[in-house]
Amino acid sequence: MDSHAGLETPRLRLRQWRQSDRAPFAAMNANAKVMEFFPSTLDRQASDALADRCEAYIAQRGCGFWALELKQTGQFIGFTGLHVPTADLPFAPCVEVGWRLAHEYWGQGFASEAARAALRFGFLELGLPAIVSFTALANLRSRAVMQRLGMQLALPHFDHPAVAAGSNLRAHCLYSLAREDWLARQSERES
Image (cartoon, rainbow, N blue to C red; front, side, top):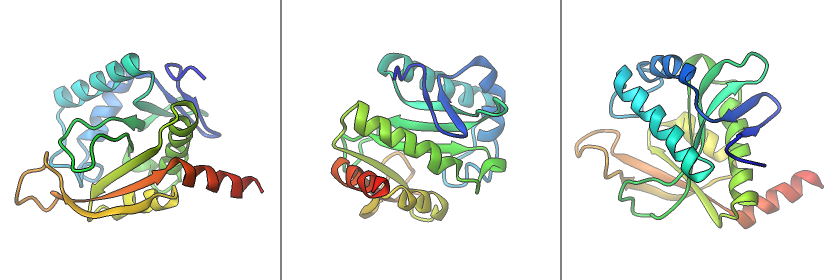
């Protein structure tokens, strides 16, 4: 599949960003609940700049944090995808799977569904040996998604270098999934 065109799941489309995504993305990034485990909410300018970076990354690499929409309605609900972090992380270089959804779409399995498509693409199309995900220690919702994806706790604590010292968000954990483990899980599901 041409990843520039995106990926599809039964309910979702992971696709390149559009100008029309900017306003709902900004509303999402201004929501304190959505941004609870990030250093701050984003104003419209910062949100638009992030969307621009996501769009450029996909155009350059063929994948990235794709815009996420409901297939049934075409509604933008957030982003999901694969990304190479630029922070000086203790486990770099790596490819991460990540997601951010508007609050009203939480608890419906959308993050897991979209992340599974991203993992499939990463392992089958890109041939990645492993994919990681990381979050603040207190972000139990994202950690639960990582566990549902079959990811294993690989580093129970590290200080995220891009988060200010003294912040309660600096303490992070790392989950990882090896390609062979993902393939074994797929075989089990099919048998």
